[in-house]
Amino acid sequence: MAIERTCIGCRNRDSTDQLLRIVSKDRHIVVDVARTASGRGAYVHSNPKCVSQAVNRKAVTRALRVSGDIDLTALQDLAT
Image (cartoon, rainbow, N blue to C red; front, side, top):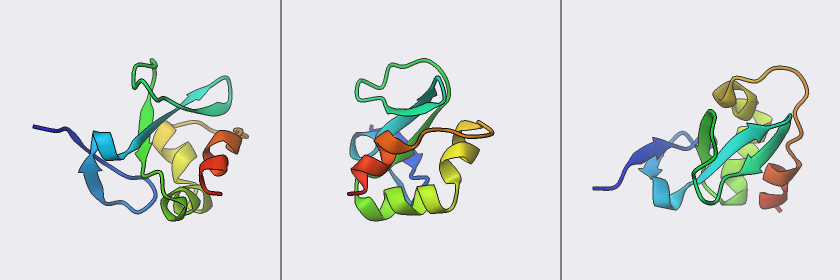
């Protein structure tokens, strides 16, 4: 049975193998490909629409519980 998580972009549930796990490391967003990084993680579909929604709604900082400025470059690169 696959584990399901909610995409922070579209808010739809999907299995973890269909979602990217992101974490915050030193004020930068990192895509956790191996899904083994420590710390709080959030999940987003890899399609540009979901990534854009997550960034525009500020869902990334809210889901990861970080405040202030955070570098979203790695995540925004997925939206292009």
